[in-house]
Length: 156
Image (cartoon, rainbow, N blue to C red):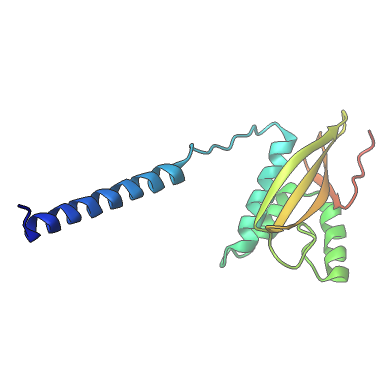
């Protein structure tokens, strides 16, 4: 004969087992494979991706001070910084991002190179269904960005 205590004990063990198995499956499914990001300092596409990653972090993080301006000074030609400032005054938006807000993510794709120039397409993701693309041109000798816009300037 089975007692009420025995039935209660089996129910508790069964519930605990079901809970443990459920959590195990959830933890295993969400763990996924480790992610990695790599780059090469001599690669211009990596350099453009590094700039966009650092710049977006700088404008997103509160208290980053003048980091965004410092990054512009490091990665952009002096002449283009002036052009960008004029564009921003006219458009009332961030010239690097071509927007008034900050994207959720970005992706940089090689769009071709010559001996003198590298061109990349930067896809900025604003929400699940909203992205914009900008073309970034970089001089290969100075490794400085000299243009960001809807179309590239590099002559191929």
